[in-house]
Length: 316
Image 1 (cartoon, rainbow, N blue to C red):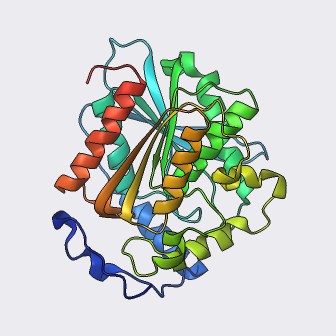
Image 2 (cartoon, rainbow, N blue to C red):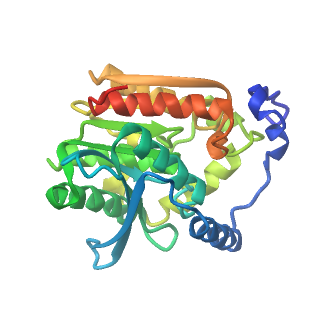
């Protein structure tokens, strides 16, 4: 549906011209984008009121997983809630500086610690390795909660886009493996469905930020050498059992090819007896929240932070 008339929020006017329906996510382009992303992180400044540290932990295959930990500079608080966060990037792109800025906002305004997971990427690593990196990071946080000053009863996971898929998968894995008991999952415009059969996944080929064409390429990279036994986690909505999962906050954007699968996942979670808050934002697109100064972005951040505060039983 290339002739789709996209009407964006007034704060986002002009972004409809940035749509790239024919962009090819080639290995060269991925490498170039990742170089730019690396520089953007290196140039990012730590927000006042936060403390940052880096950790390296062992992966199940003998590799290494990097973690960045952000925490409010509050020495009087003995045990803080924690959000283990998985960044977006189509499973092939590393984190950008603006992603860290958003998670720093979550930490400052929610009073929680953030463990930002630098999971390894496709196509160099399989979907199973990526999922295990994410799950191993969660286990590490729980096992080291005492030394990290984290309340083990208030650990949540979150992620945006591909990171939303990883957060959803880790939530299911933790239930099935009887791992860390999570209090909450926050999924921001999440990837949930490998079938790509929803109306938005088929027809939104000319939307800004992300589109159906790029979505197909993403799944091609992510599913390469995928373990069929892990597919119910790789494509979270396909898991036949979604019972006994923690409360969820799911945000979807009106002009996002992932919109319908995010809504479908929220509905399936709810139908299985789970508590779900679905926030459908009109006039927005995938990745609209790159500029934190926009009022529509601030409104979205406020809703996410309020959801975190409620999950962590913190004062608003």
